[in-house]
Image (tube, rainbow, N blue to C red; front, side, top):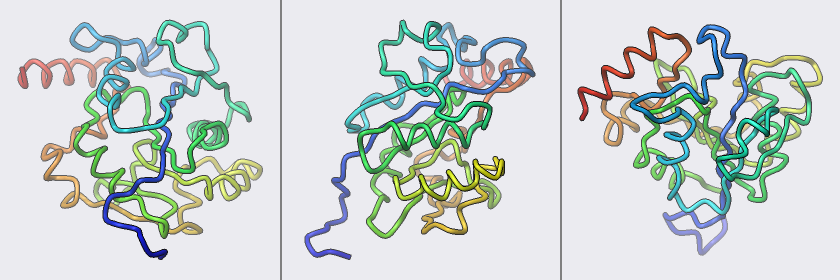
Amino acid sequence: MSGGHCATYKTPFSLAIIAGGQSRRMGRDKAFVELGGKALIERVIARSANLGQSETILITNKPAQYAHLGLPMFGDILRDKGSLGGIYTALTRAKSPDVLVLACDMPFVNTDLLHYMVGQCRDEFDIVVPTVDGYPQGLHAIYKKTCIAPIAEQLAANRLKIIRFYDQMRVRYLDEADCAPFDPQGRSFANLNTPEELAEAERLLAASG
């Protein structure tokens, strides 16, 4: 590790919000489903607005629907490759060497936890990712551009499971104990796929005032 590196990581990072997915179970585009009167994607944008990122970009194949958000938009470089394809596009298009990737349907992303994750970035890690019950949350993670080639290999072979290339990378896993001080209920990673999950999120939102 090079000298002069202190605990605070100063390399610029980009924020990429992935607004893809078929939303089949929700029955409509999840990004614009409202929770507490605010679209899910707008909640994600608001909660991740002031992390110190050099840019915030949107990965979407439907730019007209998202134009009102006023963010730079990029369509998938490789179509029909799922979330991994979205991550690949984000890493390729982002200006910064590190890219914080968030799904558009996680309305409870936690600003403090995101700050902590950014602080965990080091030269010796390619990925910083929280885990739940040992399972990495790949759409709530920071990836370096060093991941581009391994992801391209996976996409070429049509292996679309996000975490499948992790064993080739240097990964900093954050377990529940790491995340609990910032997000004791672990709600950061809750993504809303069904009307039932939306109703439960409405209940949680009301309960938390």
